[in-house]
Length: 333
Image 1 (tube, rainbow, N blue to C red):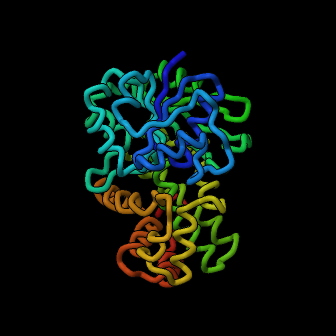
Image 2: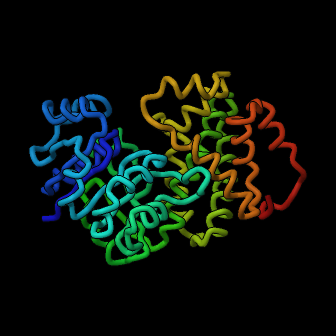
Image 3: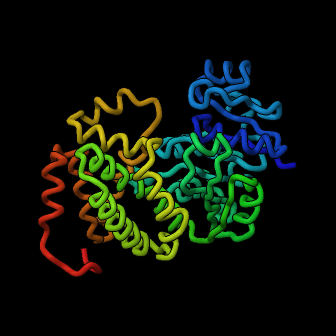
């Protein structure tokens, strides 16, 4: 059977490593903090991010990136999006011969590159060997084997199908797609809208407001996605509206949490300093703001979330500005 390495043993990386090991694959997980790697290997459990769930015997942990990647057939990148470039630089020598599965959701600041583009450019990995796995899949639920769906996207139907088969279980249903642009942008940009949903919750604005935010937010995501070359139908699927709904509404959503705390008057620095795990939407908001201007796409919700995060706009004023924009057709922005 294929040898699989999971790079990044946070909650999602650990969940996927356990899933694959339980299917019988030999899985090697890489943890960047040496002390944590040692404890995980000794205790057969990730007590930091997934306590109470034991590792199968064929899941082992290492702190050595070379050991984790040299002999792997599939490398699963489960690190935060802003770390993907650093990892690809570290495995550049072996990366071109590997199948790379990215599960990070984000757009790189400054370059505005999607994760598959970084993997291709930095690691010199052929596009036909890159897959992005994305969908409404909180680790807190998948790790308990609650039914979930996800999409494996690649320019290559062949490798997308291989990854589909690799991960499919009776509780984890994997669809496939060749629209990797749409799948990556849907998974990334929904985190921006989720911060807005958290602001709405924190202000106590109700269900009507959140419904409006989700639907108008989806329109923004779709407009930008299509301008970047995505298929508009992708955003009405699992990796689009599916991921958007769960991230805007779930108690597990770190991005929704950030927005909720902002609405309660806390500063961004104060919020993030107490978070163990990354809220990808913070950095992605910067990239989405930059990309929308580069592509000349009007994204009013994203613009106002950017101003709340980085320009000291109050959430209350942001809502007022959005609600009092000039009247227009629903097809307009």
